[in-house]
Length: 319
Figure 1 (spheres, one colour):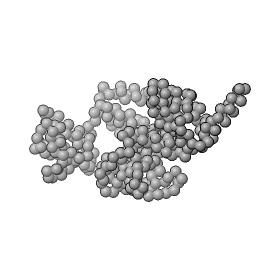
Figure 2 (cartoon, rainbow, N blue to C red):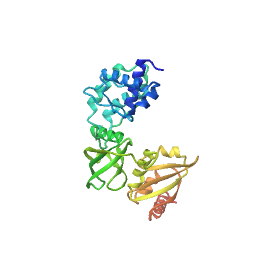
Figure 3 (cartoon, rainbow, N blue to C red):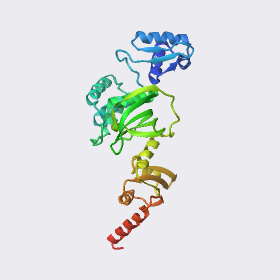
Figure 4 (tube, helix red, strand yellow):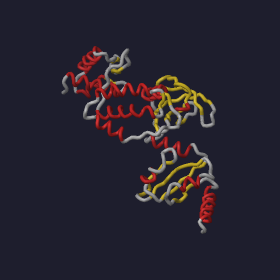
């Protein structure tokens, strides 16, 4: 059983972790009755936290937005993650938050416990950021999409595809995926009745939210791997599958997620699924893997090009 102060802090932490909470679930988590939850909610309101209640048997509680930002509760790992994220925001792929990141970081470091400062300092000292040349994404667009994913709200936005054609999309957003260079949205496209992966930097303006929806079964259990597969094979006109004589872990370090997917076969071999925009360039990209490989699946013409390149290189060294 928790004391009143500790219980209030735990209640606040639960309300911040999820959008909606039935009163009975909160009572079970905190090992108290529903009446105690109601009293604790009133105490939080008196401290400035806008906790909204839904009446009825299936009623519950939601921490809403108020006129001012109340204090947030962060555990140790969350505080370290926020501090490191703020320090690297200026060199990231999100635009418009550089100055505000510095101000927020100053406030966080002022109250950061002494035991956490070495962790933050070590991560920052060991990290060197290279300036990126890729497209940036406005922070307001990311937060709007993230909120729609969390709240299961439909989105409508203008979108420019690979050819530059402008379209209007109506989607049910599932998750944002960051590859390190770009942001992608995995969503169910209502007009095309299928799952799609959208580059966020190609979204025109801030998406408009619509009705709430019941979440569908995701297209894959591992969304990061799903997006990697979409980017490394689906976008290319020529696709190929290779069996490579190398451990999967070793090859994964050399092939970025946007260039191919790596599947372990055994301790000494793996399967790579990748693609190519032009067949003439494919042999030279494959040679950069640095390991022997066997072509299991290939588009027409690729095997002949591999032979031509192999013979050309052999002649170049007098064989």
